[in-house]
Image (tube, rainbow, N blue to C red; front, side, top):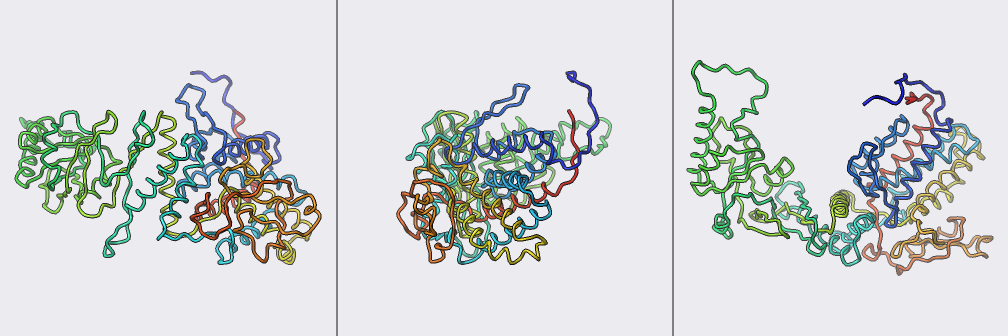
Length: 564
């Protein structure tokens, strides 16, 4: 396919953020991510210009992966956000909106770039110290003895993905399954090493969401040639298992590109087949009843094993290799040229044939307390099912992060607005550090206001329906707005749920806008009564990524641009 124009060399441009075209791209990216933010975010349909599959999503991981740009600054930002999402699975849109807001607000100031970056870093340290401290009022301690609190954390992740298309009953059902699957990955034996198990996701299109379930062990697709009477023999009895991650088709793939020296007249295929049959004979003598191979098994070996009452499962894929090893306790054999040691065999408590819709599946039930479970996710169409699977995976990851750091932050914009109010309250102390920051007090006030406006912009991005409330969520946290009389007084404003009000709230100045809604959640200090919670580790890291990337973009003096 020929190019529309000739390729021209890239150019090096000074002060890239002063370019109007780059400014337009930054604004466009901020509008895209802001419109996707929250449970009422607008959906995006993404495809390239050569007719690839259309993706409908509002999830940051899918959206950022689909966005194609030739602008080096935006590429740098997108890669940084993707790295955050890969590690923390949450708050990708939050980081993107905050970073772009910090850059845009900084460009509107008369302060020097060095001053803006210096103040931003100081405010970043201030926010981190407050969030990590014990006096933080927007941080909730998660009690792992209460399933309700874990349920809130899982539900908060799932309801933020509107493409899932779940009603309240379906949301509760899926959130419960996520929490149940997470709890099953935690070892119950204190003598075991602290190593979490795995959850396998099986997507089933065309079935009702209520049919989704969590089962102990692993579900794999039933082979086409698999007699049901063979499974019935092991529905209530243990079964010895051999697992291979090497090909048993006789193709010598494990040798690689090494040169082979073959004697004249030797029949290589017959020799390999003889080795396979000897391997099958050994497993028959060892009492193996199920042979599982990640790749392909030679048809002759399959026939031999079936004639001796051994079930065969092949081509189950690399994704299921680790869960199967977890469940069976077997060691994956990487070669067929050595005998299988006895300690390499595994065992399952039973085998069962299950049907989910029209899809027959083989259920491997583990011995003892399982640390591996399978979540069967059902939905009406492929788009919703893919988004639901991604949301459940991210909710599981968030719960694992909560196990590492048992805290959560108030969601639905509360934390952002609270941090903005805290930073404004501490601005007087920031003024005292003007000499150390190398700027005058007026510059600090301007940059601090830009920083707080960026945080408030993230909270206001949750409003998509043109209403009057700052955060238009039916079950979310809402910040009280100052009345007409309070706009000219020092009356303290606080979160409508009552969680953030304290003695110091009288000195905090909250959002200077008029939004009359109050939080419908009754005042309480229990996380189980909060409707929206964000991952503590994910949000703190997203905050740091956003500020550091904003500083990096502001500090970049030169940018190589492709004029095409």
